[in-house]
Image (cartoon, rainbow, N blue to C red):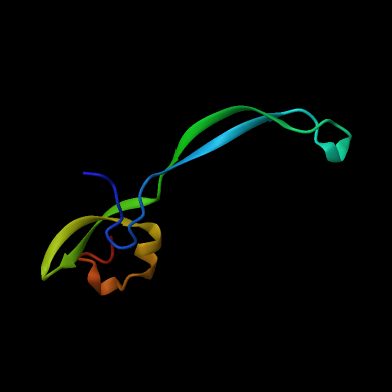
Length: 80
């Protein structure tokens, strides 16, 4: 089961980072050259919480943004 927020739909994204070499033209160089590209994963801040779904408690993944925006009465134990 993948980790996806039940409210916002946030999930793991794939991005790239790049290494550059050289001196920028602004400082009198010939420019920056790209010498390496690496893949990385950006993971959302997901937390497992128990909420009421159709009158029954259910454990779901929620992002931190969803936790801040949701009404506290939706949570089974709001003090946890």
